[in-house]
Length: 266
Image 1 (cartoon, rainbow, N blue to C red):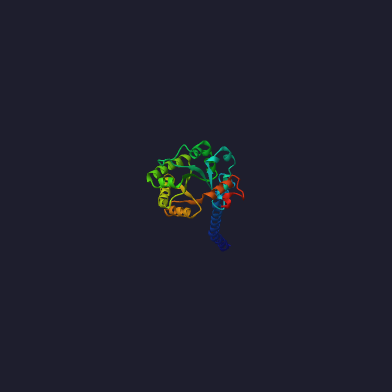
Image 2: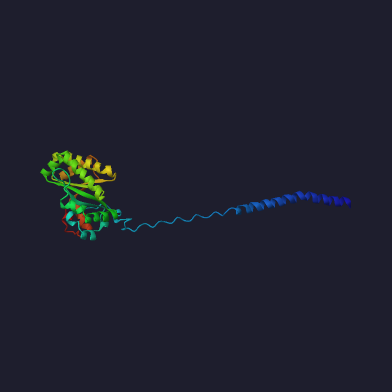
């Protein structure tokens, strides 16, 4: 019996290491299973909400950004009044130019004429603010009319410099985006001086605002095309307009445009 007992005892002793490994493996497995649970569970990131775009026609998304092309309108001083402010549809415009200011014998702006007084008055400033709130680009128009008048102006760099200085100050005061130059009846002799004036004006405005613009209004004829080319060759322009079509744009914005409009037919 003794040998049998020893054999049984021996078998028990031989099985202990296996049981020890089994227990260790079980504990290890338990640790492997439990250990990840000791860390906080990863949380799925909250979805980023999609921002709601501003309504078309609101100040954040003005209609001027949704037009199929540029619509540039002149607002003459005799229409700068509270009634115009009340019904002008800024959504129909991409750009608006307040018409107009001109120069005195020294070249400085004439601060007593109706155009200057209208655009610098309370209503003019209110129209500018309303237009810009709708994303409409706003310019003021500088006019100089007549063959003799233009020979005097474009033949004298000092007069031109005085006008540019005053236009620069007025643009800053009104908070507008640029100047439209409407010069009519210029002898071809002064076309180069005209181009230089437009280039110098743009450079002066951009010294204050790198995004400032200068546009020109010309007649829809050969001389008008030549004037536009001279200015464009100096890289001085942002836009060129036939002033008759721009009046049509204003009529569109005020709801007065019809098929019988002389501006449309031209």
